[in-house]
Image 1 (tube, rainbow, N blue to C red):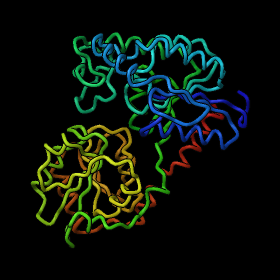
Image 2 (image 1 turned 30 degrees about the vertical axis):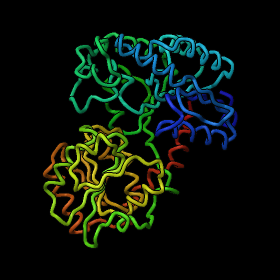
Image 3 (image 1 turned 90 degrees about the horizontal axis):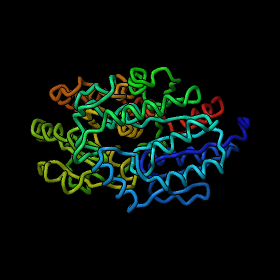
Length: 403
């Protein structure tokens, strides 16, 4: 190790955009500001930084994706790009290699892990989902599968991401991952965003490795109580109670069906607003639900969080629940299912956790919050400040220095 003020970290992620890409870019900034060195390699996107490299493009990613679907094996292609990455790794000679999402059709994992097995660098893996210790699945809660504990095979989700047209290769991929990851020895440290995910890792073949929980953080300069004319713009009359749901991809796993059910069972003076929808989602929604398509404007999102009475998150699969934190930061209480990391965010001072998949309990909680107003804005904001991004990046910097 070169010392706390002169270490080099090499970060790898599937994209420089989205939530995981933003985390990686922010870590680069933290390293730079603290007098350390960094390099960032990513699968797709554009990041205007001389200490970064894009490893793929749409055409190459599409070819990799199709080969994965045909063979049932994701992460076994893009060999030339992976050799290019290893050449860069050797050139940079980092103290720490920080892996984020490796799934995403941009790397040849057998080649990469052959290099990682032989390098002297310390390895940190931040798990943003469950992919690392399963044969293929990023999520398995919704289908209640526990085959990852014994070796996968007979995958109930072989037809979904990463999708396969013909073959279930989950057992082979599981065995390969186990071989690759356990070959890293005592150089490996695992980070999870929630205690829930850490608990799953401890039940997996990675259970004997050091595991540290570092929650994902939010930008409190963006998410805070923000006034707007939201109600006026959408013609929402005074006295109507606003219910908000936010997701980047809507479906049953995120509870779209629950919102449809709530719209049919809430009183007339309640209005549901969903953000992150699209034309396909709109066809599944009753007209009484206000649908707002995807927006990259986080300030506008903060305005919406602030304008509503309660944020409802009927997700069935969630590592932590960033939308819950964003809502609290804007002073709005939360109702969510007891699933994943959600109970680690919402306390009795800022919202209600209802039993998993219990729509009636969620309905009762929504009406209770809207009618009784039991939660104070200040309590919600105070809770969200625990998840300030600045605090979380400081935790990562300390981990780098100790690794």
